[in-house]
Image (cartoon, rainbow, N blue to C red; front, top):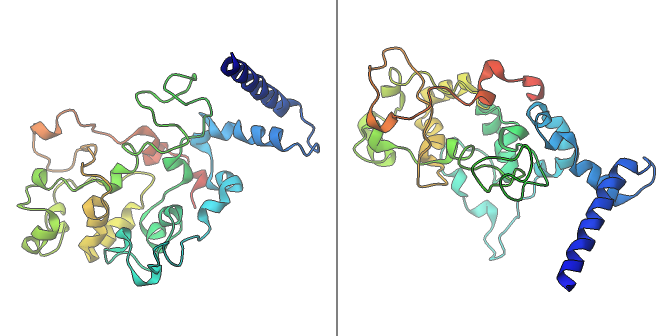
Length: 270
């Protein structure tokens, strides 16, 4: 009975807090209702999250862009004396950076990416503690909306290079000398419809690829978080062979609608 009583009290307290959100005077100084008002902001829900600008998100979450890398690890290893996994390729410049800064404000991010807060974050629906618990909950997974769906987002740039399908004899680090260390040696004429999505700077990426294969490999296997590869949409390109190979059957032929450039509201573009 004690457990049931505690649950009922918690539910009553939650109901009071949410009710207080709507009724609390603006100058009341009541911390809890103000927190609840922010928690249930329309920016955390569909459809407002899709139109939210970085400025709106960072009004409350500004701390994510503040430099906060430790000068040394708890074990005493100095950051200045070691290279993190994301610094291993020649395309990365500068000292170690935090996660959000690497995707939004570092020189590489500004040069090659057009990432926004809602590229990865699709809201913070407090009710989504399990699938189907709200009218707009995510379908097909237990990823909380406030977290990032890693398979749909991170894997796009942090999966393994699918070198067997590409026809390479070995992974790129061992095969690159056969191709003069130049990805465009083949891709100048193969799968030429690429990077046409709102979260990337397509022209800059193509230019960087002419200068260094690391600019390509960095996102296509060089900074892999996973041992699997991402099934990129197989857009039609000029000269594309007829028929679909077995490995490509079932692949999408268009990017996700929210990432198609013409369908994207760039109001939050930096």
